[in-house]
Length: 297
Image 1 (cartoon, rainbow, N blue to C red):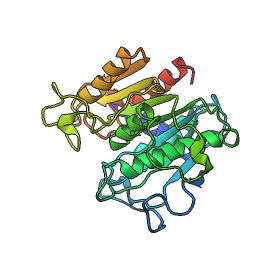
Image 2: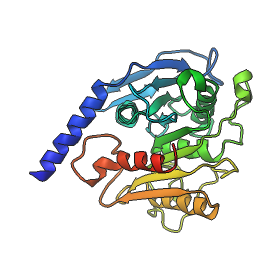
Image 3: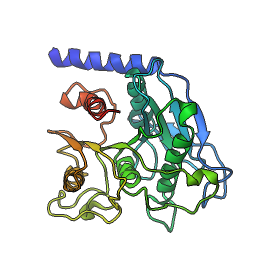
């Protein structure tokens, strides 16, 4: 009975947060067509049999801003939904996360980066360009968005967690050639929350970890440059995308004296996002928010 009640309370909280979500503002990331694109089309998506809405095609990447009714902080969290770089889990790893943050007084933005993967390029090629551009757009519009330009964070799920690591550890490496004056704006983030990040270790560089992440080196994607920020990791220990990837990045950050926090949940798999849950992982977002407050964001 207690578990049923806790599930009901959680589901009610999610519903209330969604119904009070402020109207979004949509900003295209690029003037005209994005680099490497030849068309401009509306996002293509649908609700699937499991009840989840997924976007399968993005050619015009956007930043979708959600403002809280009452701000508790001048920080901004950029949200990168997951989907294997094949699509975007736009609700339970996107708008529902923004709704939670808004309920806590935090400004949020869901980034619809380009999917699916572009042939002939690294899986994250287009998405990484879009992520760097999204940070620049947010920083350049800090006053308009009502945020501090040095309190910009990012969080992402699965492939979006990999994109979060690309964005936060490799901001001093240009993902693309400058296209206009916006590209003179720095694209570092000030804090990051990779949520069950994928493709972190060599034995799972494009899928599940074959050896469960044991004794596997980290991929060479991440530079861990001078602008690498504090991070908070969330992962499940039953995830086929091994939590050892999060542990490896956590260890690397601590060797650099960069503050980091990590929560690994027992008997929890992949892709839980903000889906209603009556078990102990259901409050994972509270851990991220508490960490943000401790870190001054």
